[in-house]
Image 1: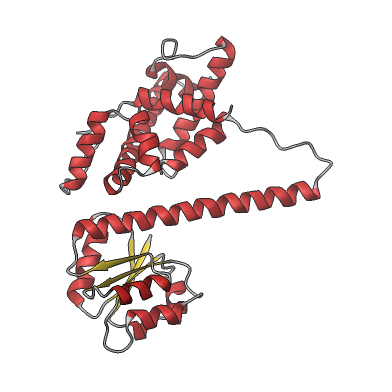
Image 2: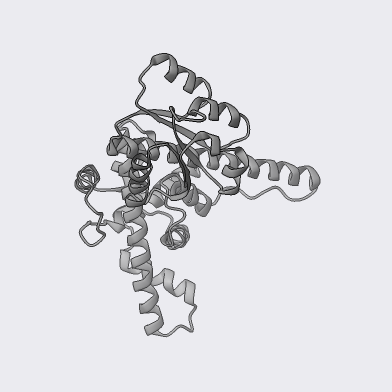
Length: 309
């Protein structure tokens, strides 16, 4: 996420930048003291995702600036102002802003809004990716009608969807988890059924996945090294996913992703603990978080299998 901040008050710009940087919400693409300095080409040059803009400014106010950008800026706009006039706020929303925040700035409100905007941008990007994929498949099918049909969904594609839904797919450990799904599906094919009672131990899963990755010629030391590295990658990925899912619930308890994934994949005590940490701006720590890797892997596999039916 890349932010551009427009406000004639340098103190407000500084506060917004501190919040964005302290909470690792993204990068500051630029700043300006007046809407007169903003144009679509500038925002495109800086690859801006979110424009944070004041309503009242000396030369060109926020409303005028948004009108000038109409149809030429694809990102999201969040307006910040001390004015609480319903007519002004209504006009701002009619021009397509995402949220209207009243001054003085409240840190928690800024965090809540920017996380919602981030989630909406991610969702739009996912929809756009799906549409591009469908268009590509449509063109492929049109040009190769005589070719064999596209293969059915696999455990990997189902797992990839679930990890994307939880915001994990960019983490290094996501590849390890997809490899685990493939291994577990192979086990189920050979043994006809997997249940919580017959599920292999976490140690066996990591070991067999490492052997599949390195090959039979790998030395015991190489296998042990890969197992430890994989365990760390997976733990970090699950930790980041827990933080992401909890932040959604902290913003909105009825958020569909929070409702659908939080209780399934994570222990309630850790969800509650993480919520309190985020509310109190406590720096998250992997070492102080109990990661139930086996539960996560089991649920991920069972949910991925459910998607295939």
